[in-house]
Image 1 (cartoon, rainbow, N blue to C red):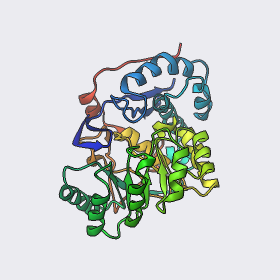
Image 2 (cartoon, rainbow, N blue to C red; image 1 turned 180 degrees about the vertical axis):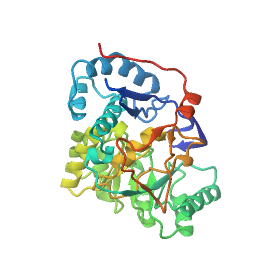
Image 3 (cartoon, rainbow, N blue to C red; image 1 turned 90 degrees about the horizontal axis):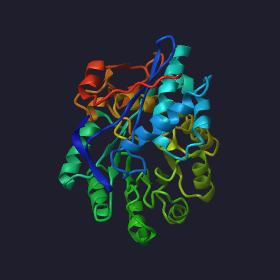
Length: 358
């Protein structure tokens, strides 16, 4: 699918998104849907669209079809023999979670234990060609009602950008996302960010680092939020134990599915660590899964869960995700709460594959 506007971060620019919609169908014709979130190039994690397809077809589906499933929580355990490849796992598991909720005749949010009827929405803004462009984009999103703004930063586009932003928007909930663009050698620059009253700074150091973030967090007043470093409950325990962060960004695809996301959420709730739901330029199915997980109680900050028209000319779900007064209402409908817009999906489809349990 073509993005309405290119999205630039410290590690690349995206103008299209290739992905898989995974449909799980039971013997009674009920369907559940999941969405893969890997990018075509391994910028964010080691996974790509191509590796996701390979792992799903050749490893995960044979494991899934090996024996019956009573509950989606069983899938993460079954898939544990395959190392990492979390985005591939999450795409398959997500479809089964949706199917499970529909068979139980409850919403996916309810199946996960969520209790909110509405979630607040933030927006992530990629690196802009100029500060004036950035300020215009921010103003537009604030007028739309978004409750929190996240700005992408990188060396040379950080302190002065944030200073100008704060001059124009002194009171908004603002955070900065570095996507691992800095090292401890940049500690003096990162300490200067304390003056901007940021809600948090996300993943300033290495994508796989936990230890050095503990050193940096001890030097900063601004809370560090870990993103790429947290790929499992084990990682979350290590980060909290070392004092590497005060906030965790949870992305379903990054940690391997809804079951693992819920485990990390529950751990963070027990340890008073706020979490929030990050985005991966999802289309409607993935966005609906994010809405469901963000209904859990420890999601204490607005997530990167924006309206469908923020990214897409036409989404593949109906109705599209809509923003109302800075938030999104959860639908009390079995499963993800949205239908597939099959006409929109077919207009973007490249190929279709069917795999059956023997």
